[in-house]
Amino acid sequence: MNANEALKKLADGNRRFVDGRPTHPHQKPERRAITSSAQQPFAQVLTCSDSRVVPEILFDTGIGDIFVLRVAGNIVDDAVLGSLEYGAAHLNIPLIVVLGHTRCGAVTAAVEGADTGDHITALVESLLPAVEASRSKPGDPVENAVRANVFLETEILRQSEPTLAKLWETRAIQVVGAVYDIGTGEVEWLDLDRSTPE
Image (cartoon, rainbow, N blue to C red; front, side):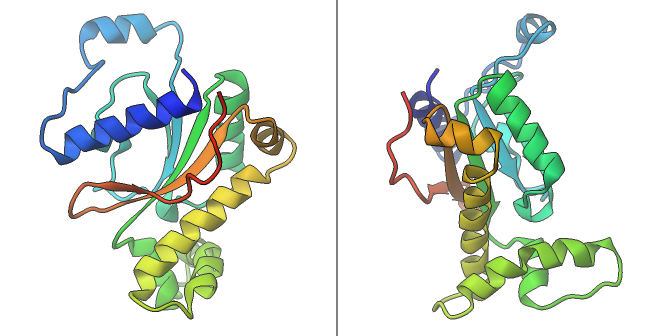
């Protein structure tokens, strides 16, 4: 499966989820048996830890279909980079999706300048570039920062040397951003301006 096909598969799955007609593919014991010795996911999804954002459900996928990384604010750090590099270079997954979501608590904390005095503060600080990048834009500051964060994290992945940047430049992978609306269930794709690799 190439990146175009992977993206369409995710979009189609999300449409089924939004319409209330999910098919729940690859969730039977046979699938568990097939994937017990190896995995061949068709997409990687970096998203938030929020309990309302469950990629396997909102994209209507099953066991072994998507390689999911979850961290509050869907931020990129070395552990996330290493995991995505493994998926792209060793599992040959052609698509990476950075999936933000509406009403994100981590982004809200960053917009409000929260300082909890613990490790949450470090998480909030990681989101401050997105807050600054979106500060002058009209509209809801949290939703603006959510979108800005998706763009920033997507660019980090595209420029990450040596592995992801090379795969991106040679069109071996596609890296796209999206925002999930926790109210409607719909995924909005943000930056599909570059043709995906074949």
